[in-house]
Length: 119
Image 1: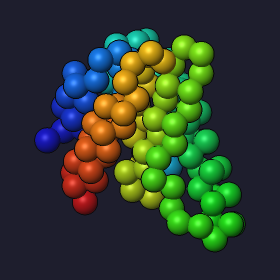
Image 2: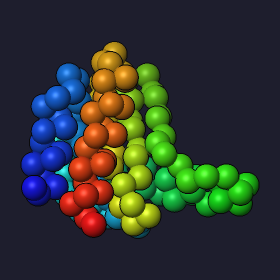
Image 3: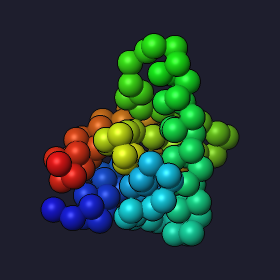
Image 4: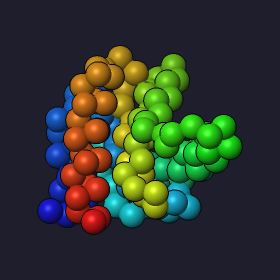
C-alpha cells in the first residue's frame, strides 16, 4: 500500500483532521495528505521534524527510552508527532476541539502500517 493511501485513510477516519505528513530525519516531506494548504502542511512537517530531533537528543542525553509520541496543543490545533523509524516520522494535525484519543489511536495504527511498508 502506498504512503499516500495510508495518509488519506488516516484523515478519513479522524473528524477534524487537517493534514498528515511523513517527514524524514531532516524534516523533508516524503508524502502527505491535506485538507489544509499543502505548503503550510509541509512547513509544519519540517518544524515538527526539528522538534522531534531535538527532543530525541535530549531524551538520549538523559539515558531514557526512545520517544513514542509527542502531542503539541495550541489554541486552535493539536499536532501529533509519532516516530515511525529512526529516519521517518508521522505528523498529524487536527482542530483543537476534536477527539485527541481517537486521533492517537488511528495515528498509532497508521504509524505501525507505515513501519511495515518501510521495512
